Image (cartoon, rainbow over all chains, first blue to last red; front, side, top):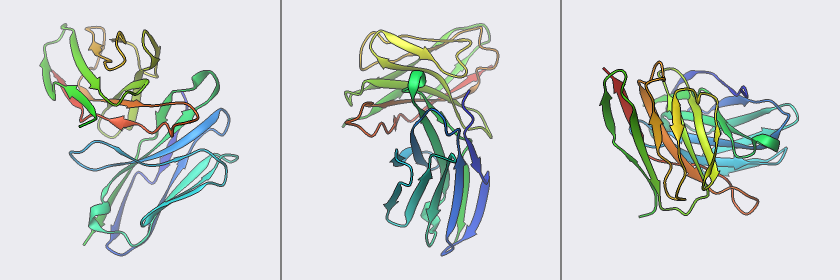
Amino acid sequence: ILNVEQSPQSLHVQEGDSTNFTCSFPSSNFYALHWYRWETAKSPEALFVMTLNGDEKKKGRISATLNTKEGYSYLYIKGSQPEDSATYLCALHAGGTSYGKLTFGQGTILTVHP
Amino acid sequence: DGGITQSPKYLFRKEGQNVTLSCEQNLNHDAMYWYRQDPGQGLRLIYYSQIVNDFQKGDIAEGYSVSREKKESFPLTVTSAQKNPTAFYLCASSNLGQAHTGELFFGEGSRLTVL
């Protein structure tokens, strides 16, 4: 079983604060790293799919970086808003004989207080 | 609209009964997945399939079975051998390969409760 770890487990911030969370994964057998946002009563939706070491992706106030050599990715939210409240999941898409298998971390629950 | 449809949304089962959860997609995706979520835990992979008539065990396949007879459909059977089946089940699909990002598209989930 591939071990994908996310930290922190939960986070409470005030509206306007910037925040970041971490996803750690085994650096061997890497194919891609996914980030998803899961809002309550909805389905998870993809934020980013990252494949190259040093990749940086941005969508509005949310951005992500990837370091495949040391096995981590950061997700940043600038100027958090209450609508950013959700569970943020990362998933490792393995390569080699495990190609096609996506393993999720436990998620980071973000609550943004007005 | 294109998407993934899971049914039923809620299901109650007596101990010892098998139950099948349906997952249908009209996105023309090659790969389909079943995940399970328990309180305080992330999504754990039960089974996945990259092509029709082929599927692989995920990390927690014991007590579950799947079939992939059609590209659009990937039903999951929770058998009586699954010791703790009460959970939220999510189905997903994606297109793999260099021409695609591989991002997952999810259904709305099925909540199974064993009485």
